[in-house]
Image (cartoon, rainbow, N blue to C red; front, side, top):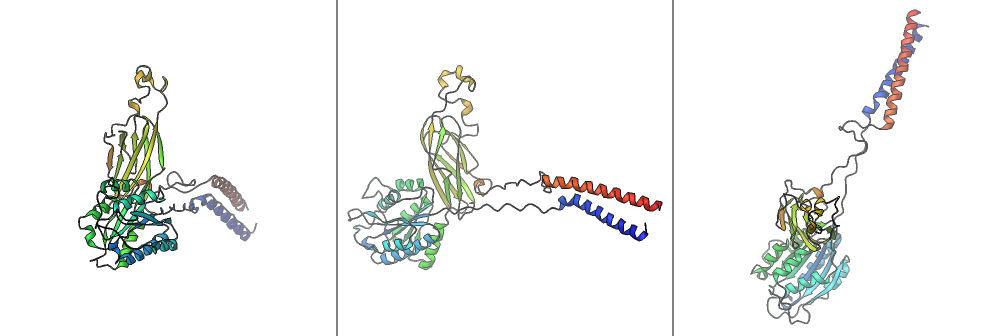
Length: 423
């Protein structure tokens, strides 16, 4: 065979052999699998009720109150929330509190309802604010899972206890507000209205704050922007189910979700309050709690979080506890020796040594963001165990085929070289 031909053939065979070797190694240079899309979340809709004092003392401010309410409703509706309107006066007036419009996403309908308001009546200075708040909580179609807020526009203090309904006190109404995760944001046209600190206490107890118009260096638009921005971006916490069912004597895990603006919260403390049933409570990972009820019944549970910047969110649920199955000899050996405990769980079903006898547990997270609001990364099926290169069954077949080709070509090259030397 001529030398030129032999050299060309040798080069071709060498090139093919090198290609075969790259075919064997190619899986190591394969492009990584595409990353999983980042998890998305849906913003929790807001329910915001606007209460307007329409007593006679508001006659000089009623027009501004109406404009403020409409502007607020437009912003809240644009953010995906719902708005409702309640007007109130005082005991002895034709109406004490009434709904002008229930919750709606129709800003035009809300504006039309606002236009019907007029100032009159009122009698003495304090007004029926507690009655109006109670009416708002019990007569509007609140969304149970949504954060609730009330913007209260007034220029006067309020009766405590309420004159129209003496059973209503600031303490009792505040408890009802917290039980329904409802924050109050008083918007006072006069600083006199908070001269005794009533509104400051009410707002602080529910996680809201007071805004006073007179004496403020901000314009009404700036005040409203700040107020509504706080309302629509406020933190929320909610239980993962409207109600829960548990078995007496068995530990039960209560779970929540929380966030603000579709993002995790920086939580300073979590407080779990189990109002009745005297359960044994073991604090969980801040956003969860484990409780064991000894006897059947329906019990109330409240969770409150406080963010690092002082904002609060509260949620309440009920747990229906039913009688558990009677223990048998195979599952509960102590049942044969202690007949009186057949309907009461043994020590194996009570809380562990970490449980505290108190029905209130406060947890300070070691990290600022609660675990439930930061989705864990989900490994893909192609991820290598040691974080190495991705391989699949098809690539293994390629490895075998490439190795076989490389060996065949290497053998051919050796044969040609031997013949070349003989020639």
